[in-house]
Amino acid sequence: MYGGRHFGVQLEDPGSIDKQARLYSVQHLFEEGLVYCPDTDWADEVISQCMRFPKAKHDDLVDTVSMAMRYLRRTGFAMRQEEVQEDFEMSRQHLGRPPEPLYGGI
Image (cartoon, helix red, strand yellow):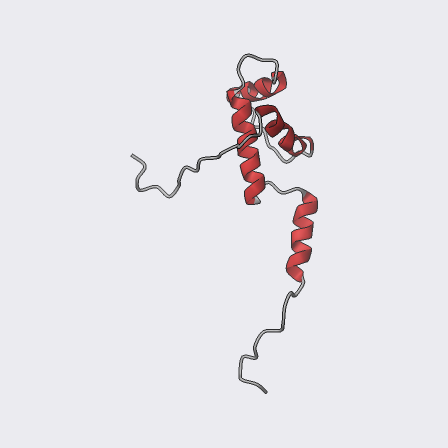
């Protein structure tokens, strides 16, 4: 059905980290305002499930949120302002020897 589309599915293995630890590992992203929440019914459901975690009966959406945020962190899509600034500063530094001259050794 989606064979011609340019996207794929990647399996995410949480390893031995439990759901609560995964959520705590990305909690700072929400506190720092890096996560946008649209004003929709499904977003309200996700938020309310996250607020009731770990005492609620259902926690599938919480696990989805934590795994997605961990993926975004690992791939560099959800970076804190300090990380963006440091990446910028590192990109301005020259590492290694100077490039070869374009027109021979003058």
